[in-house]
Image (cartoon, rainbow, N blue to C red; front, side, top):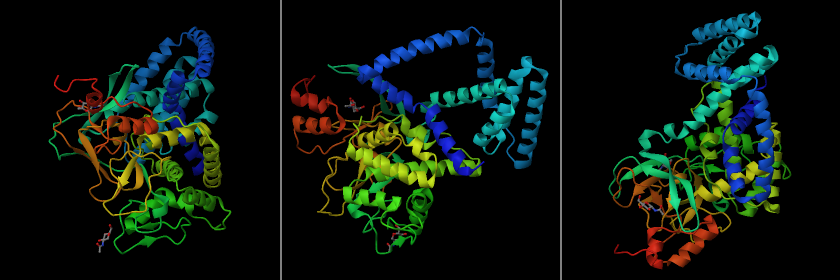
Length: 485
Ligand SMILES: *[C@@H]1O[C@H](CO)[C@@H](O)[C@H](O)[C@H]1NC(C)=O
Ligand SMILES: *[C@@H]1O[C@H](CO)[C@@H](O)[C@H](O)[C@H]1NC(C)=O
C-alpha cells in the first residue's frame, strides 16, 4: 500500500479512536442546548441498538477479548527481524486453521491474528489486508481487540504521562467557586522545591516566531537570537533562517520540507499563499498549526517506515488540553481553506482531516495554552498582538510555543512558579518562586502582574482566557478573604 495513504489512515485512526472528540462533545454538551437535544435523541437510538446487540450474548466474547488484550499486553514478543517473521507466519497460519474449523473457534482465531499484528512492521497496512482476506466475523473480533487496547492505553494516559522525571503529575481537582463547581485538571508537584529550583524542562511541540521577525535575527526553529552565522535552505520558499545546521535539519525534516518546498515558486502557489497570509496577517497561529499538522504527518511516516511507535502520539498529548471555543469567522474560513489546499497537494486525504471543527479546536488550544517566548533583547518595535493570546508575564515576546506539560499550569496572580527560557530559545523551564511541598498544585501567571490592581488583571484574564480570577491575591484585594485569617 502507498505510504501516504496509510499515513492519513493512521492519523485519522488516532484522532477518531482517541478522545479528542469526547472532550469536544463535553464542551458542547455544557454550552449548546441544541446539541444537548440532538445528543438525547442519538442516545436513545444508541440505547435501542445496544439492547439488540446485547441479546446476542456478547458478554462472554467481550470478557474473552478484554482478558486476551490484557494478556497480550504482558507478553514479550520477539524483537529481531527473523524471529518476528517466524512468529508472524506461525500466528497467521494458526489463525487460518482455527477459522477453518468453524464459528466455535473464531475467538481463538482472532487472537492469533491480533498477536500477528503485534510484530508486523506496519499494522495499519496489515489491518487493510485482514479486512480483505479474513471473514468479517473474525475481522470484527480483531478490530474489537484493537479498540480495547487503544481505549486502555488512553485510559492510562495520566499514569504514564508526564514521565516521572518531570517531577509533576496531572490530577483532577474540584474547583469550588461561587458560580459553579466543576472538576479541572491541575499540575501537582511530586517533590519538594525551594525558590529558584528548576522543576522541569520541556521542549515545544510547535513554536513560531512573530512573523515580522522571521528571516532576520532569530532562528526559525528554536527561536534563538542569531550570533552572526546563519543557515538556510535554498529550496525553502518561506525563507526561514536558522542558528545552526542542526536546527535547519530538524525544521526541514519535521515540517519545512513538507510545507514549503516546491518546484512551483510562483506567487499563486499554495505555499506562497499560506506564507503571504501569515506574513501579511502578522499572525503566527496558522503557521504553528501547519507545522503541528506536518509534524503529525512526519510522526506517522516515521512509524510506518521504522515500525517504532512512541507510546503516545502528539495528537494524544494535545487532545486532552483545554481550549477556547473559537467562533468561525471569515478569517478562520480563509485559514482553513489555505491549509486544506496546501495539505491536499502534499498528503492527499489530509484535507479531510482538517475539518473546520478540528481546525478551530486546534486554534482554540493554542489560544488557551501557548506561552510567549521572551527575550532580554530590546525589541522596541514588537507590539502585542491582541488576537493571538499568549501566556506571558514578560514585556517582550518574540514568538509562541506550545507545550505538553506546562499547558496544565493554572493561573494565579501570585503563583508559586515562573516560566523561563534559560538557553534563550524555545526550551522552557518551570522554576519555583516559592517553597513548594510534594502534593502542592503548581501555578504560573498568565499575565504581567506588576502593580496592576485586581480589576485590571481580571479584565485581561476574562478577555483572553474567559475566566474570572479567584486566586488568593485577587480575593485579598477584593476583601473576599481575610489576609489575617
Ligand atoms: C553561534 O550559535 C551556534 C548555535 O546556537 C553555536 O553552535 C555557535 O558556537 C555560536 N557561535 C558563536 C561565535 O558564538
Ligand atoms: C496556586 O498554588 C498554590 C500552592 O499549591 C495554591 O495554594 C493556590 O490555591 C493555587 N492558586 C490557584 C488559583 O489555583
